[in-house]
Image (cartoon, rainbow, N blue to C red; front, side):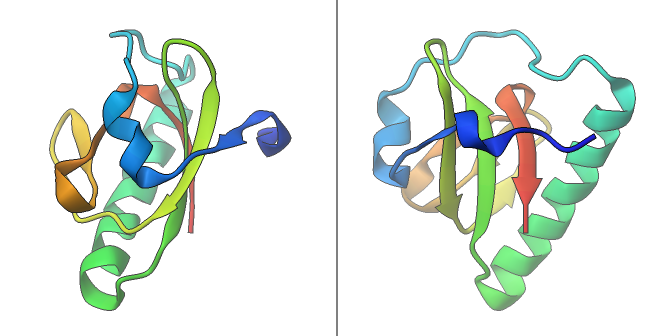
Length: 97
């Protein structure tokens, strides 16, 4: 099922550090969680090899947002962007390459 991306507000990467993220998973389907992990690994490879920008659809404590950026690293809990900016993986709805 395709997600409605029109409800996501565009944000600059530099503003992500100011956001607050709850500790609650945004995806309820285990298949979607597996899919997100696979997309993240692909985004990491493309970011490191080709510096490809991807769209990350995520949710902070107040609203849904989307950022277009390069993924520099992935830990078990966070996506690492340039300048040490991080997004908790459990707050990510989708990654579009």
